[in-house]
Structures are given as C-alpha cells and as structure tokens.
Image 1 (cartoon, rainbow, N blue to C red):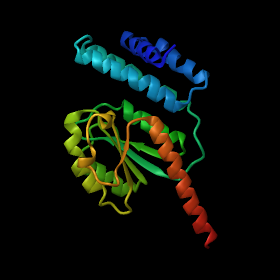
Image 2 (image 1 turned 90 degrees about the horizontal axis):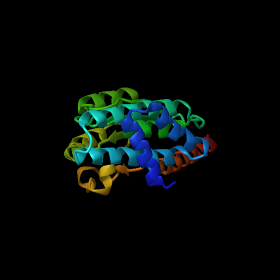
Image 3 (image 1 turned 135 degrees about the vertical axis):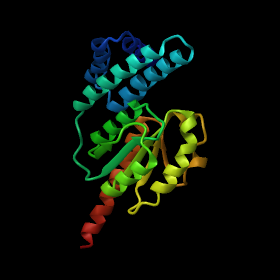
Length: 225
C-alpha cells in the first residue's frame, strides 16, 4: 500500500465519521513500528491536506470538513497519550496559533514531538493575540516559542509577533511551523534567526541537534566548576 493510498484511506475514514476505522489505521502503522514523525508526515498531514482540497473544490461541505477535523483531533489526542517520552531535557516550549488562526492539528503534532523528546510543553491553542503570547512568554520564560499558521492571509501577522517576541529576555528560539513555507517566502516577515519547520521529521531533527548542543554546553560548564 503506498503512502498516498494510506493517507487517502485515512481521510475517507475521517469523512465517514468512523472513529474506530480511523484509529485502527494509525494503530496498525504504530504496531508495524513506524515512528511518530512518519505517521504525522505521511498519514495525518497529507490526509488533512486532501480533505482541504476536497472542500476547496466544493466536493464536501463545511460540516463534513469539521467532522473530519474533529475526529482527527480526538484520535491524535488519544495517540499522544501512548507515545513513549524520552528523558526530561528540562527545557520548555510555548506553542500557539497566530491571531485569526483556528487550525490546531499541526500545533498538536508539534506539541507531541516536543513531548516525545522530553520537553515541557504549554500549548495555548488557536487564535492567540500577540499581547497574550507576550504575557505568557514573560511569565513562563520558555526556551523555544513555536507559532503555527495555515492560512495565507495570516502571513503579514508574523512580523509584529516576531519583532515583539525577539525582545524577550532571555531570548527564546522562535520557530514558525507551516505548510505555507513551501509556497510563500515567509523570511521577509521574520528575522534571520527565525527557524522554519514544515514537517515533524524536520522538527525532530532540529530537536536532536538542539538537545545535543545544550547537553554539550552543560557538560563543558560542569567541567569548569
């Protein structure tokens, strides 16, 4: 079975409102040993993209799209509970969608990837105004701030978020997660230090490098005292 067929089958199960069938598809991949990033990048993401394309072509209704999205979120939350987590890294990440953004599946997959790698996560969900993002960042002092956007009209909103969050002290690493990275030049709305992630496999690789680098720094500091 090809990855495309698997994603389409999953999408159709979601559109049918069939929770058991949808869950069984994910459980089968998990049982076969496929890692989380594969399930997210090769199953869930393309399935939801396919559903979005059906909606854009008026082949499904808004109600059907909402049904599929709701079931996917339930299944994703259930799947996340059973993911084995790495040893704690004593690192914190703050996640949210930009104001006006209401699609949270990508955000939940990012939260899952961070948790799997031993990070403490606060997921503030959709449609978060800038002032509230800044308030929580100042209060919690995360090592990383991750922002998600899925709609092109939100792209200009990136600039004030990036500018304000980069003024924080201590300065967090800032990640922009979006499928739009492959279609639009987001760099002009961000800074040279902004990290762009479009797939969970990319986030997983970045986290491994980040964790290894900080472990080395901690080791060097320990040796010097």
